[in-house]
Image 1: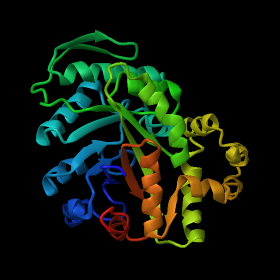
Image 2: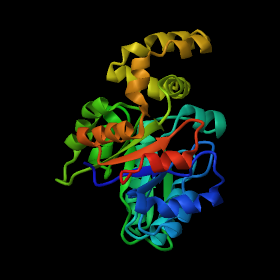
Image 3: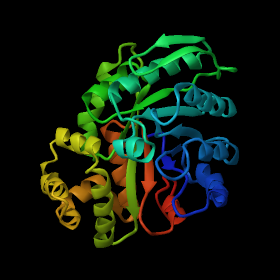
Image 4: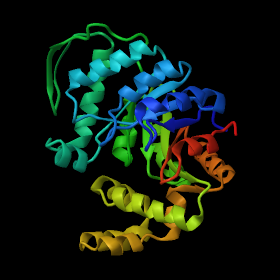
Length: 322
């Protein structure tokens, strides 16, 4: 069994300020971690800053902060501030995000994603140590930046990764990987690329975001799951990931999507794929499914409840102490 058990915050459908009571209860429910994301809702840092005071024993992590939408120095300052507010309890997860978020929503070219992650990782290593950074990277340059106060300890740096190149970068230069949109069995394909690239003898953390719909009938859960799968897995980076994993069952969905047939794409997603990628069913069954990710090599499962139900009830139902 995993020693860690995380939940995604903020919870959807609940005003941020009203989430204090449930976040305060998380440690008693058995949760060890809260991890934020950043797309079109809350930013990645504010919910964690609140959680750091509402539940001071929780570990805090970003999964993820996009490397394109903040300048390198701004990203370092945000990370250093949260690391200083919660010493030893914060992990910074960075990722490329997607062309939709970067280009369509933020009007920033989504170019050379591997190099951008690598360069940002190298910059952060140096900047968060307190060093003065003067460097010409492939994707940006920094001339004379020094953090006003370097965090102690320096937070772990994790890389969101899907395919082998980025997975190996996460293991070789990062402190671990953040993985997403995969089954427990897929973990066995992904994790060896991370751990096999480590050259310093240290183990690497593997954080997995796991989408869950507890205590919901199968038809409803699969309907919700299909919408989520069609929204994510037609994005080029996720499509390429599942093509690499060999998930040929999604080929009819991709074909319909490419032809502009959104309803056809939704209908083409097999139940078996939904069942692989979305944890659903009775709460105890969901907890067993989440533990299967840990058995396959995930060190930190991070649950992301989805669907129209009460997210606070889902948090309680999926707690390991239940």
